[in-house]
Amino acid sequence: LRTGCFPFIKYPCSRAAPQDLALQDAFFTALKVLNAGIPTLLYGIGSWFFARVTETVHTSHGPVTIYFLNKEDEGAMY
Image (cartoon, rainbow, N blue to C red):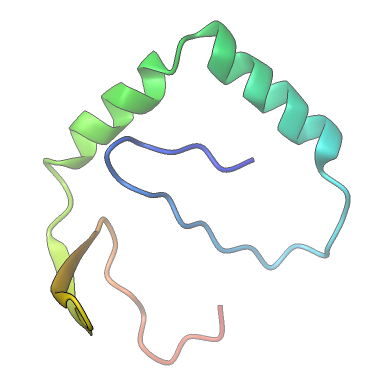
């Protein structure tokens, strides 16, 4: 059910109980194919204007800056 917003990665979290979402996933995948991914591309381009929260992660290949649309709520349960 995850829809990307190219060139960003969307990382949703949910408190919903685990359930089989295969049917919904197939439906939304078909919608993405039918609209050629244009809405997700436009969403990603628009996100460039709002992604202001950053965090630098140090990896073995050097530092990587990660951009977020929302600031993380430190200490939140969800």
